[in-house]
Length: 517
Image (tube, rainbow, N blue to C red; front, side, top):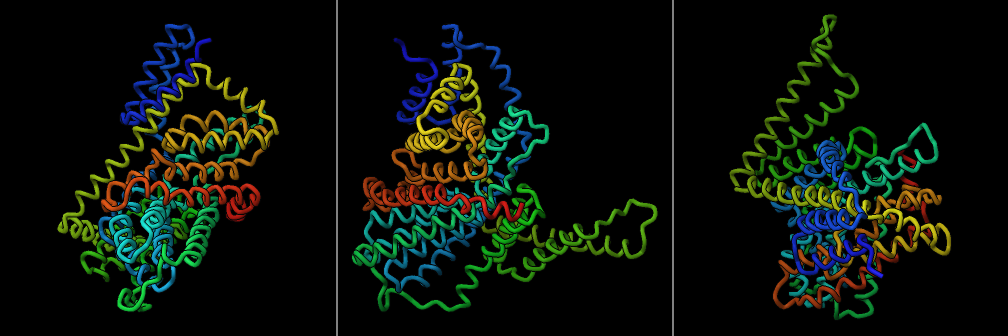
């Protein structure tokens, strides 16, 4: 009996990735090849490929995905302007006198950077260059140090804002609408990015707590693996230094997440706020133009409030003198904000930071969108070869009903995370299984967070975990690849514990979005 073409397609994809061929080319090339194989065997209708143009157009016109390049830009600005480095060094001095203190500081900084950038690569590279050598210098076990850096960097995929959550929100919303239509509902509800951000916040903080507890217990049971810094090894840090390093990122976090969760801004608008805010922080950091940057930020903030409370339309014929005054004031605020923004851009250009920032933003954005586009092509061929019916039959016939089906799907996603990136899993597999799981009665919001936590783990699972690659590229030669793999193993187990806690206590994920939305 010959192996079905849809299963052969998945096997070929895994083999191509193991060989090391680029992901996007592998997805598109195999999809094209198997489409013609299927057509020749009478198992695929080539007319399905007519949907490719529509899928590409839908991708580039998707309002939700506009937030991705803006959040990427925000993260790259914070990394290139060394704001992340200042934060990491300050927190390291603050926690250094504790056993495991340096590791705890890396986790805390990882959480703060996750909530202000959402970019895993930038976070892991920054901490790998700054924190890892310091931890090795102060006699931390290399495997533990590497594991902490890798794991803290992946928090950017579960703590909002996050590219994973943005892509997942689009996929899960489409699946939820599909389920409602199949039930004959005329009033269709959607899942928004804001709801998913709110749902992911508490589980993300739960993971941070689990990581810190692990480091505390491990360092007390085995002090030699994560010793406390003594005497001249650590300098005291003043409250003003802590505030200077921590407050700016916290303000940016409140501006971005607060505007989304409060319903003031859409994710794309909030991402724009974050991008401009990051430029203001960078301008203050590299050019010492604190007053102008603060004035610009406050001007744009006040302008947002005024425009929301009392919008002025100067083209009206019956406009009053007070409205003219408000309009002129708003234009003045725009002028101050633009002056600060242009000054921040000029300072970044003078420091030769602007070009690397834009280049890195374009590179990462192109990689993400190329993967989404080619994964959509792959999914189209995969479904056309009969995978949808096969997976539906397997999931619905799982022993244990709805719970058994969910356990099976979560296990498949976890195993695929060893060889596939979160984008491929989200675009190819989840649209096939999530409608079935929702039809079985699983809450779509809770389901989304379980899959998000599972997909976040894929950044840590060897051999293709992205965080492992990022750290391997910047780690000192004395840290081996085997030590990196051993170091992340306990944190993968902690992620599984986090998934189990959210499974047993669904309100961890559903309480905040139910309250806010």
